[in-house]
Amino acid sequence: MALHTNRPVERDGKVFDRLAANLALSPMWHADGMGVSIAVRLTPYRAGPDGPERLDDAAQAVVYGDAVEAAASDPAVAGFLQALEAAAQAFIDAKGL
Image 1 (tube, rainbow, N blue to C red):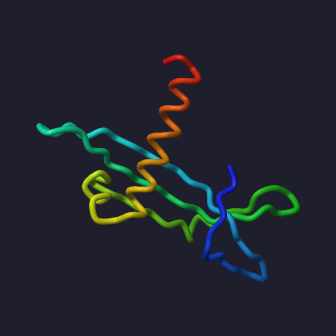
Image 2 (cartoon, rainbow, N blue to C red):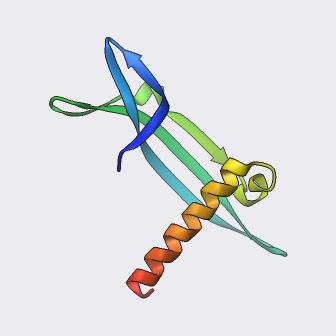
């Protein structure tokens, strides 16, 4: 999956214009509903002549203790959660889970 960054990293004349994403989700049980903690690590990489070249030292972490709570005031987080939920539901439906 090739994700493209809006802020490419340039190092040694090479442009690292893609991001590899490591995503972790964990449900949070509240008395009045559910939340979800999210941790994302985005590692810049480029398609090199001998395969992908990555910049582990330029990786960025994005963490939300409760993304549902954060989504109430951050439209980007809200959109991300909606897209994740729709994708997960489509997968569950397609697999008959």
